[in-house]
Amino acid sequence: MAAPKIIVLGSLNGNLESAFKKLSALHAKNSFTLALLTGDVFGPSTPDSVLDALLSGSLPVPLPTYFSVGAAHPLPARIVAKLRADEDVCPNLHFLGRRSVTKTSDGLRIVSLGGALVDSLPPNDDNGNEDGAAGNNSKEQHVAFHTQDDARSLKGANGADILLTSTWPADIWKYSKVPLDDAHKSQVAAATASRCVAELCAALRPRYHLTASPGAFFYEREPFIQAAAAAAAGDANSDDVSVTRFISLAPYGNAAKQKALYAFTLNKAVDDAVPPGATASPLLSASRDKKRLRNDVDDGDASSYNRYGQHHDGRRQKRHRHHQQLPPPGPDQCFFCLSNPNTATHMHALTFPGHLLIIPLPHTPTLSSSSSSSSLASARHEMTRFRLSLQSMLSRRFSLGAITWEISRARNVHLVWQLVALPAALVTRGLAEAALRVEADAHNYPAFITKASTSKEDEDEAGDFVRVWLWAESDDDDAVHSKTLVMPLEAEARFDLQFVRRAVGKLLGLEARRVRWQDCAQTEEEETKDAEAFREAFKEWDFTLE
Image 1 (cartoon, rainbow, N blue to C red):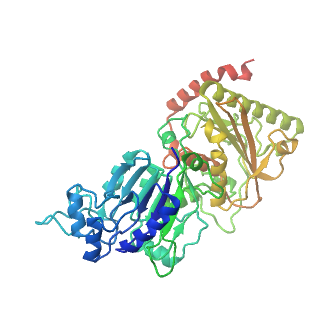
Image 2: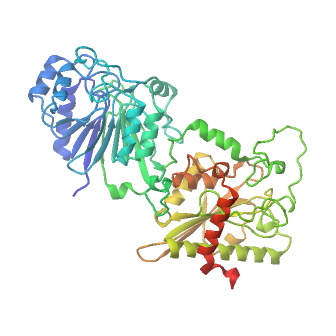
Image 3: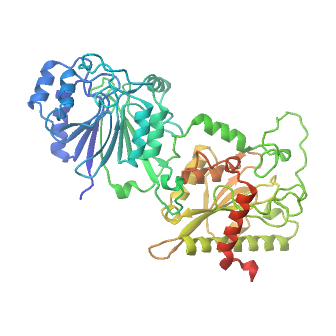
């Protein structure tokens, strides 16, 4: 079956005659599969003559065309009467409902959430609200409102090719370089851009999220990478990662001549690929992100060290402009040194059981700062053997790939490599690399440089840097996909020590509950059980037992 060709129109606001005439001309030249009408199809006072022509069929709709209820104007009473009779408005014009999941004859899955957000739907009046001007009970599909419960119920649709909403998701411009001026942002805010629409888009991960602009402007942000829902549910073998495109159409016939028509071909195979310029998902709470970033950013103060840069009691020490910086902890106080009597030797993972730490025995902040070249070479060799052995175990036993990273900084306390198991397809399809690059771009960090995994230059990387190894075997031909990425860091620059963990968490759909290590606490009994399970699984590849 050929990929569907779709044309989308902005709010018609009652301009049906000119819109359908234009649509007929375009359809004759392009043979579209279907059309989608965003926003308000009808205006506050659509003329009876237009409604007569539409309902009688004398105003033809040239191809299958779908619409929902808008956020600004209720549907005309005559249209509501047709809908209550469970009839199409006219041939080729199909009403999706304010809250619906529709599968077209071409196999497209369209989820619709129409109307403006309200706390609750008003009750019916004695006449059943025939004019559609007020909300009815939740079974009425034509009312120009929706509630948070409506949005939550649609999350059960389990995916969509197209999400059609009457309002914008909150913070959709976050991470985007596409300009949206303050006046347009104010219009969006006044039209109630909502968190529940953002959460719905995050849950469904549609290929396209289409809506209507509340003013005379067109907005199309960069595609963004959506988290893997199956991975969030605990399916480590899932490679279900999506790219979403958000497009908002200007009103049809607007005086500013802003784009009110948009055509595209929905090619599922192509749309699965991560396009150039894609960003991280903007659909997380901005306040939550900022709060977590404040908690996790490394300020270079060794006195606040514990595990990953937090003070021992979990709170940041206040920074004073003229305070004396304390020396870094010695081996007897280091969380990762065996000479520390409080070292948790039973612990093996943080994010989930597929998250492992590779730690050198020498108490050193970087491999290049080791006191002797022989100990440097020995530590690097042994850590690399562990990394390769773990990769082999993950591939052979579980058909998984892996991402390993190190943050090498002169002011570190003890060097740690972190390894996380990933669905192999996230590596082979380039999604893991894309997630890292868009996260770096979102935080204005230096760009990653691709290095040959076996080069001498890569081994002897100097200065402060972040290094990431991506590795997986392809299921198709057993080919090995291996890549090393390096991000150079300035010595005094502030850097989020959880940067890679955050990117991986988003990729796996864990950003809401597993990104911060403080949120992943287990009892000693649970950690010990996980460690024992790991040792048993790794036994065949454990070269220390030879």
